[in-house]
Amino acid sequence: MTADARDPGTVDVDLPCDGPIDTEGILSWFAARAVRGVEVVTADSYARTLRMPGGVAWFEVRVEPSGGIRLRARLSDSADLPGLVTSARRLFDLDADPTAIDDALRSHAELAPRVDAVPGIRVPGTSDPHEMLIRAMVGQQITVAAATTALSALTDALGERIGGAAGHDRLFPTMASIAEHGTEVLRGPTARIRAITAAAAALADGSLVLTAADDAASQRAALLARPGIGPWTADYVRMRVTGDPDITLPGDVAVRAGAAAVGIPSDPRGFEGWAARTSPWRTYLTAHLWRAAPVAQRGVRLPFRAVSTD
View 1 (tube, helix red, strand yellow):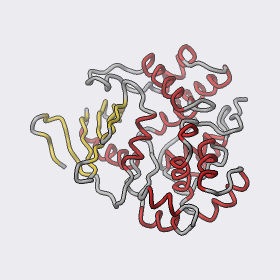
View 2 (view 1 turned 60 degrees about the vertical axis):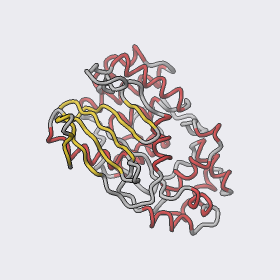
View 3 (view 1 turned 30 degrees about the horizontal axis):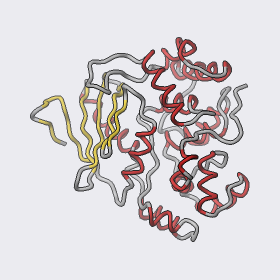
View 4 (view 1 turned 135 degrees about the vertical axis):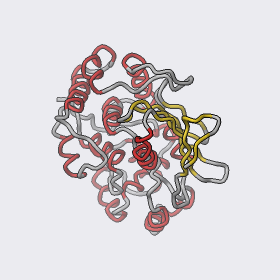
C-alpha cells in the first residue's frame, strides 16, 4: 500500500491475483452497464463513487501495462480501506482459480475452443449488494441499454450530489430514497415499479437482508418470496453478490443463444442437464456462453418467460 505524494488523500493498493485474467471482457461488461455520474469505464480501468460506512469513497481499479491490477482510492475514513479492497476483489472476481476452472471446462470438447479463446474468464461481482438487486430488478424484461438508461435517470433524479470530478459527481440512490420517490422516476408496468420500491423499502428497514456473506440457498429463498422476483433475478443476484461459482441461468436469452452457438442444448431442460457435467463451475460456463452469444443477443437481460410481478 502506498500514498500518492501528489494527492495525500489517495491510497494505492496492489490487488494480486492468479492469472490468466480476462480483464478486457470484464471491463467491457462494466462499460455496457455504467451508470452515468457514478461509474466511468475505460479500456483499462473501472472507477466509481460508493457510499461506505465511514462516508463517501471513490475508487478506481486499473489494469497496469505489466498486467497487474491496482486499486486507487480516496476515502472519507481510512478504516473503510479493508472493506473497499474486499469489494474491489469481489467486483473483478480476483480470488477465482482460473487454472482449475479453465482445465475443468476445457475438458468438454464443445467448450475447449471457448476456453482457449478466452482464458481466465471472470464473473463480475458487485461493490454494493443492495444496489445490485435494484439494478437486476430494473433490468428485468428490458435490454442492457434500456436498463442502463433507466438506472442513470434514477440516479440523476435521486442520487446524492457530491463534489467529484466529471463522471463521478453523484452517488447511487439510497434504498430509502428509491422507496420513497422511485414511483416518480421509474417507468414501466405499475406492478414492476411497485415491486422495485417495495424491495428498496425492505432493504432500507432491514426486513430484507442481502449481503455477500449470506447462505446462498437462504438468500435465494428470501428473494423468491418477494413479489416481482423470479428465478432469473434471484439467481443472477446470487451470482453477482455471493460469488457462487455454480449457478446456471437456463432461461436467460443470451445464455441460450450462446449455448446454441457452441453446440450444446439450448432449451432450458436440455441445457440444465448438459450443464450439470460442468459443476461446480457452472457460473463460469454461464460467463462463457454470454461471451459466445451473437452480438444481437448479448444486450438482452431477461429470460424468455417474463418474470412474474404479481
